Length: 353
Picture 1: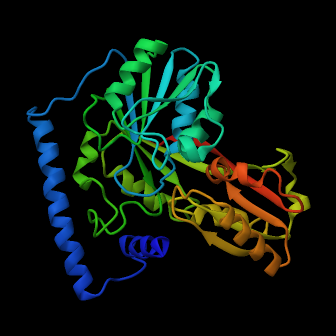
Picture 2: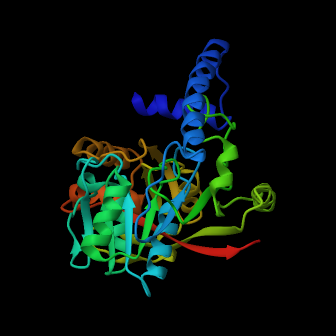
């Protein structure tokens, strides 16, 4: 039920549905107050009535203006791995929907390894990041970015702090801010919450030092690039392409030619799933697409539903994203007779201007 409501509002935010007169007025009323609060906050920081706290490290923020996934996580991973060749790096995430308290500093990974083995506990995105970054990258979750940064510096000697999704959090002073924009969704209907997907007004792009446009397999990518050029910021394009498909239970790589035209049930719990399903349709006969709420915590009931669906369509193949794997793996490790496969993507980042 809750997922259906969220999908309904997302359809409104991205112009797939039009709200009725009364709902439109109600959402506009909510947007007015939200905008007032955000503008007051930004004004207080700009006039230095509120102070951003400085730490003894170079702070890079990778964020976005909108709700929902735009593709930040692969960029965070790539940047951290690149910088960690020369500097000690810590990644700080809020750890959205984790079971850990966000009010304290949680060490998800340090040089000795990952401290948790279930993304349901520490959060799917921090867990995914921890699995893919270099050994000398520390991964931390906390809503208090300043406190987390201080601990990373004091305890681990971190020289560079990367904030995953920290654009709206202005308590910690940033040395560089990278704004990530979805090439297809962009800013939706250009309205703030709850009427639209924006968490910050569009004019706050001015706080970014650089823009990365994530190419979501966009046929109009040239038009999207021209849209992003209007920001008058250094611009890069990140293109996501399939890297491989592997079996989550065995980690064995699945060869594309073996899977050609096979029926599969695809499911995911990500913010913007359209690109995921587009990639799959080139390799599989996707007989059923199942959407869960972003950051959904999978349960045995979900697994039973997936298996029942697969039986209905006479297939034993499932496809999911790596983000989903972080939470579902403990539930499927002992299941026999079904192949829970994972699509892994790679990103190529190119300078545009």
